[in-house]
Image (cartoon, rainbow over all chains, first blue to last red; front, side, top):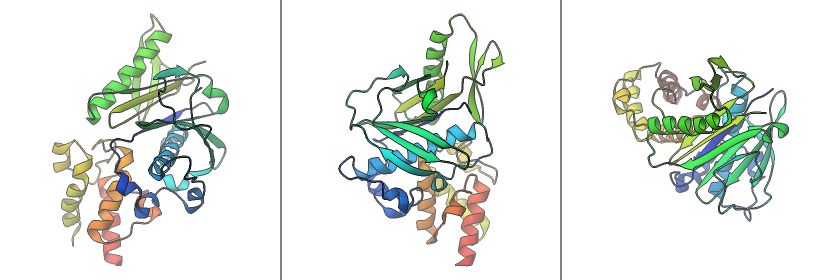
Length: 212
Length: 84
């Protein structure tokens, strides 16, 4: 199925002491997933939030075609992760295809395996989930904003995505409409083959959409 | 402890994680934590941990995943308290 999901965690606003507390991380990380942790690759809080962001991105990927799906992170099981290189010091803010990523994860669902790729920087962790082929067709962007107000984040992430959509579709009337999940409309017509996903947390916003 | 008591305490638990203070004051069973109160999903585990600490109960995985709106939060906390 064609879909994409993303998630972003702003590392400056997470509670590190709480993240290290087993009562906290055991709510969304299984014992089997803890076995995947390699202390020489990243601090434990980064690992915990990496797994959270993978699970959230995969949930968004799946929920596009199953809108009643409930986010149950403990049931989204990460089977393996690989860490090609850590960390990326000066990541790009926008791109097509995901050339820069430093964590790849495979997540088994009831019907398929979903692939997730994450970028861990010193400031944030961002994850995208789609099929290996569609990573090549994925347009994405991440940027810092000046306020962490939820309403403003929501507005700014849509404006950020619209800038890229208008660039790709000049002269067209493009809209983002949201009914549980965000969707792209061109000239008033839904574009199911251009799935869009949005995320914001703390002082960062991030979008991704597939366009072939 | 009644469900009304839990509602008042739940407002205090949710308060640090929402900027929708006016809406928080008037929440009801149908108020959705993410959609209405704009609580970031990354804070949902915080809400569960804070509720556990407040009521000295353990909220298991199956219960936690149902805590998507105010009514389900109250029902789950109430059931844990009455089972304790």
